[in-house]
Image (cartoon, helix red, strand yellow):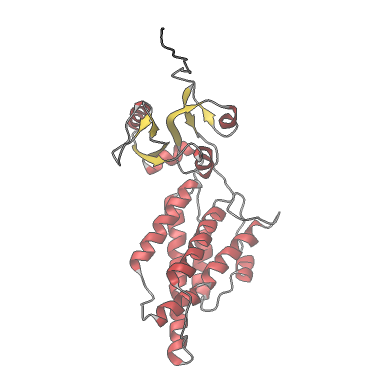
Length: 279
């Protein structure tokens, strides 16, 4: 039976990647921030060796957009996650400038880890885990704990206060519906390989019964629709990660899927039929 797979209000408080120590979520989270900012010395070294400026506005835009996108997977309000990462970027530039000033006076680095192949993948990983930590329910931010764990050479007290203030202002949506209405976007996960429900050929736009239903649903909500590519093997993984709001792809009702997400009543009943030649 093909049905719609509803996420509804599920999965609004996923934990960030990595294991947390029971009763110490703030310590784990602050350690991630410290680790990411500590890598700014290596970033500065690469830029120094390759005669690059500290500021890279295009990269800043990419980082903030990724943080907002990751935050929406966790139910974070875009303006609050963007605000924190803007402050974190300013802190990162402060630390890099600090090292530039030091090296201009004595003992500059002659070598540095590769930014694109070594440093940036780790920064992206830490950034994703920080977003997950921002969505951790029940975090109680304190300046004492923050100052004890976020200790990076070149990070000034004022910028440290800005970071903590931005963390305090992090906000989450109370429901997936609130997120959809606020952002004005309904994210629909679909496979594109299951006609007549959802199919797309050679990069053409998605077509099918469920695609039409998704557009009707978005219109009734007064929002835009965006289709998120998923696959049958990753359907539930993408669901749990918050990659989309609802799956519409002729999804059959199974016990495994019902254990993970809400499912609508079936609107189509089908089955396998044996066919043989009359003679």
